[in-house]
Length: 165
Length: 409
Image 1 (tube, rainbow over the protein chains, first blue to last red):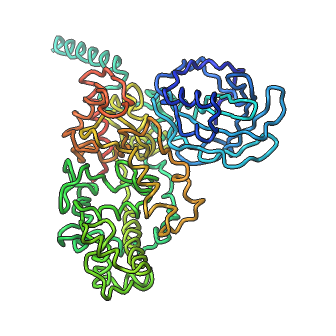
Image 2: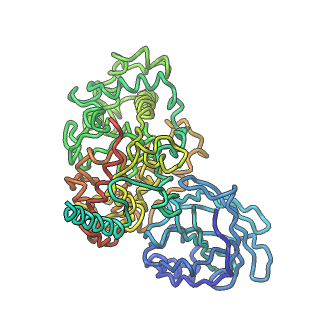
Image 3: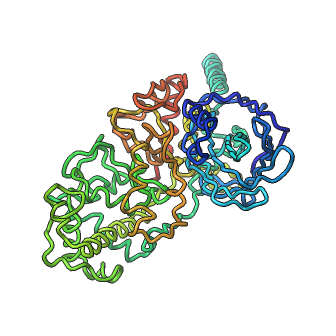
């Protein structure tokens, strides 16, 4: 149950927490992707106006490396219930990416808190699809979900806006 | 006479203008049209009638067994389950006080470090205690039994209480009680050094069977606790009345102040950000700057205990399959949100539940609302609160709304 919308502009202007900066440094020096997943943003002070939020379900990562599509399982995204998503990742050229490590983070910038769970990629479904388990949103409203995708060719991240109704 | 009527008219007009300024109707609620469609959607998520069915607890296969609930009820009120024979679960979780005690800090055989939480509605929470250090009602019930300041007893003591007083009911449900021949009266892994040494002297198989009986005490108590539910409040009647087909509408209006409070609650006061859903809680953990002991890290420590707890969802005494334990598997285990964060309590029946906060530091709802309005910096971690700049009258309106969440006698 998320609204669709305009093409991507990675215009969040998020203040990255100290931990996220450490994570970014970790990426640069080649720390394995799994180690970065425990470092989360604070989701404080990243509020962008409602009119500027992009609710597209397919977006280009911030550095332009990957095209990423979210496919929540089921007809709608439930509130306060753990559920799964399928994430589809392609290269900028449209080829499925089959060897990615993925970190998932999310939160409510207006409320200053993160997701109530720490979702994980639990299965590589092949052809660029990955099963993401442990997704949970504790309430209605505007959420931002961030995926950090790491492959041999580089690490990049992408954010999706959701409005749970 | 005419002058008096004119004066009354002026006063009436002034009241109307004031009410319009506040965005509320005078005296009683009138039409649902007072609410925007977004507000109505939010209000409807708060009504008790929208509460989902009781979620199953796969970690406790006795959770919905009426025999377990009957045994659990007896155990809940039995003070023999304590080191001094005087402390039952009901000592701090009093049925006539919404299963809490009205004290700043709980008092068992000693004094606890936190406020006693109410049991009502906890069947819906994936995490228990203020810091969520257990992940089921049955594992929660076991914590106080072994706490030195709550029940203060040991596993062998509790097994002996079962054997002496509940053998038939217990064995009909759970199978044979362990043999306690040559087992010290007081031995347990979380007791005094003497009790721990005595526990370690018992052979492993016997320790396991005693621990299983101990876990079953928790499962029976949890089965009883699942029968403890919230009852509808005046707010619920109002929420139901917003459905125009409801015949109860005439009896279910809230006052203007209460409606103004509800508007603030779901609007500028941002209460609904965490106190959401039919139980007025997101069952999640938030730092709201309420810290008395800077050493109490709240959820940051609680999740560590939940992950390693002997009685958690994936432990050997749980009846769940690992795939049933998603909350534990996907728990947030670190990060900035956890430090100084505590579980959001329900606001149902909140008025008679003073004092407030995990340390019971707020003596009144007015004091709580003042805290949220000022949003002081956290002494530990980072508070999620921002100053609300609400006026005193608005704080009183919020308090008036909260009073509508009390169940009908």
